[in-house]
Length: 95
Image (cartoon, rainbow, N blue to C red; front, side, top):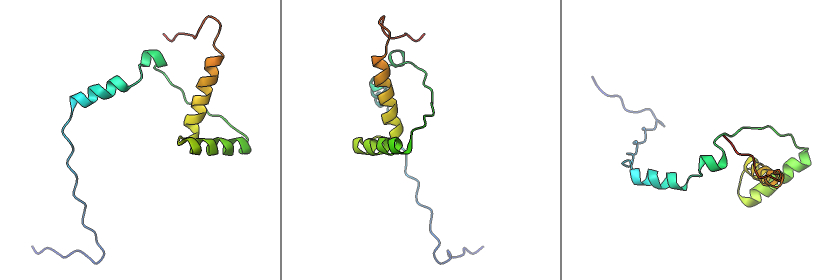
């Protein structure tokens, strides 16, 4: 059976790059850098927050200046503020 030439403008599939061999030492190094779930709380929750348009735009502007997403900046600000609101006995412990 004869092979047909590709039609005009048809692209050939790009070759699939080979994966690097698995490196257990790299896994161990990255695990050591990861935050301790016991210290940071192993659970997270997504919250939806509505901001007036002007404040939402300001959040986007400040986040862009810091090179982070607006959601990451808002989360950092909330965690920082909640840290100041801790009860006098200290932070609540997660079980």
